[in-house]
Image (cartoon, rainbow, N blue to C red):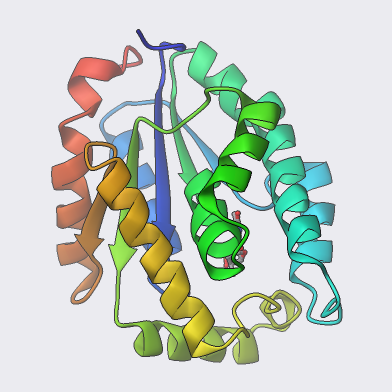
Length: 222
Ligand code: TMP
């Protein structure tokens, strides 16, 4: 039994995987079909979340403990759940979120080594059973993605101050990928890998193939 009438979709991926672009294309497509879509971004999205994002991603904060990082991710997420996600799902809308708890499982749980159980315990405490109905995880060659994220950071003044986590070692990002693989094994129905290599519109079609199976039956907003 679903807790809310709306549909909750999240995007995941390693650095530079193109998820923000693909999320934008999906949101446009859903809206062009006449559906009401609410967007979320993590960490961030709310006024409080934006301040938390700044603290989390500022490269100056190299001393940040992994548990602090985890709790701040959940602080931002809880605020977004209260202000954005739950109200929109209650209204029967489609919520599309740029990252959600799977990021915390992959980055803090797997790559930082805190473990899935710790992350899931924090999730239960902060968010209860709130979870995406469908998660699209874009896959791309890790080194190519990191090079893409790096050039974005160099060219954009804002993003340069948001690089503390993308600046981790290649091994760290390999562990992030491993975290995503573990989630896919645990929840193959919800968590879908989509090949993120190739032409932007081709990737968008692959994303649509996954999403369209969920849209007509689940959304009441058309
Ligand atoms: P973004 O670049 O996709 O906006 O994400 C910001 C960074 O935060 C990215 O390096 C991934 C990281 N992150 C975590 O480590 N844990 C989380 O729970 C989330 C949402 C993001």
